[in-house]
Figure 1 (cartoon, each protein chain N blue to C red):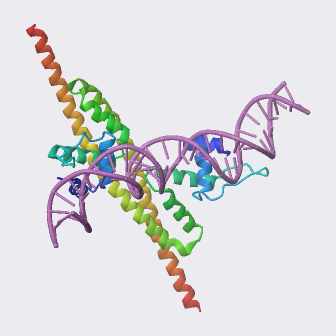
Figure 2 (figure 1 turned 180 degrees about the horizontal axis):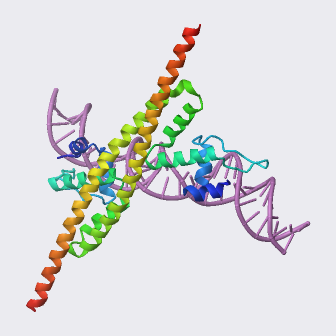
Figure 3 (figure 1 turned 30 degrees about the vertical axis):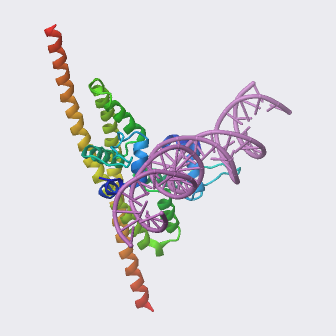
Length: 130
Length: 130
DNA sequence: GCTTGACTTAAAGTTAACTCCAGGTATTAC
DNA sequence: GTAATACCTGGAGTTAACTTTAAGTCAAGC
């Protein structure tokens, strides 16, 4: 799979894919003889993982750290687990906050609904009175 | 209430409070005779609203737009409602994505748990064999 | 009356995360 | 064989959202 196919498939721009690789968020992607990226299944797996974690708000730095640990092998299992737990906890906190804000928005939207209806009623009244 | 009290109360830096005001996210905050900010209840209400919405991911631009509409009065009710609906929908989508990622992280953490236990077992085995 | 500390402003600087650009190479289509 | 297209790299530029700085004002304590 070449870079534009991967870009299409995951909805990540070509530039961003190269940027992630340069920054060490992806292990160096497989190349063909002439140096052109040819993403393996595994490469794609990483892309998907990064995309998912980025969209949940994990930073480039955090992901680089995770992947660095990953490539150091089994002796970093505990560290990786701890990193994931820390990020999970942060994510959970963000989610809770956002959930509350979602409800607040819904409440506000309903209030607007009512106020708009009210305004229209008053408009009609005024017209009648003329 | 002066700026540092408001900063304390809402956990927003003094600089950020001034920045929000300059950017038109807050209506111009009340000042005393010598030009020093003296936040009214209402000012605080806006601060709290902005904090909440920012933490849910609404952009500075979007919030400025909302507040601008707000100060144009009743004739912008429908526009404001539409803006809130659009933001609510975006937020809902983000939430769903993040929820899925949270579950993925939990799953991954569990897998690590198991792998770590497994690794320890193998270590013990090796020690026994020596 | 002067020092200290908290406030003021406008403007410049920083950071994270991209995004674009210039100059070059490889493959395919004619 | 040359034109078009898709890729490559290193490095510069951009954007959103702050954050810092410089230069100044003001009230309180000594």
